[in-house]
Length: 323
Image (cartoon, rainbow, N blue to C red):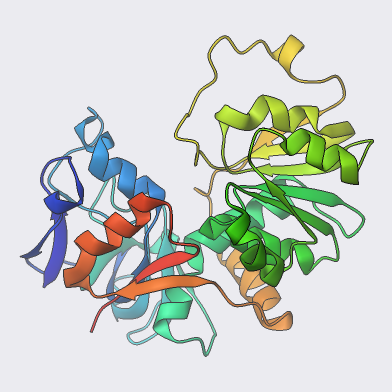
């Protein structure tokens, strides 16, 4: 089969399509014929530098999610030909992932889906929408009366979060660095767009002088302290992303830096379940929600796909479709 094997870290040009054996099925794992997969920033980080970490063993086929059909169900309850999505559980990190024509995945991280979406659109959903869904409904406990700010709104997860949040009836604010992205955010459901130009706090206080009660922080630690200052008593800030390319806060002093009565939480997308996947796809169907796809590529165009992801100009999910 064809697969993109990471032999060493570096620029997108290190990603090469190789011919490798189709994985051998083993108990507890299922073989998926990969129809398509979405790109994620964790794969970019693996390619850039994380592949050098002691806990990663190269060479490795990248890819933390995919959609396709069961090619061999092994000892699981899956049957050949079933339409499935697969995500997380060590894909593309602890074991070979989805940048390939076939992927061998632990059955606990494979989930059936009942949908008429085409492969490209389906591939734009699993990791991105599961992350947004968990952030909003598990960590932020979002309800219709809430006012939510999505920081990093033009990212794939940000666009998904805006859609899902609006489906509850909540008020949604979204931020972007560029005024030219306002139309994109409004189209997805944002009620107000704030520009990340150093005056975001002032812009928000003009709309909500007393502050808001929920923030989905996708930029990460680089803007977290400001985000916590925007939330009123008993509000919640959920850190889910690190678009700002800073994963930690130097000299973080929780008693001083977290405002009294404000709750700080996070969401890690490492615990998908069939129940949550069912809930997610039901919501997408009920509210006629569709992912924003920036562009689709073929497997042999993986270098160009990673260059687009690296540029931060995608404005949606980047998807690779196998022919």
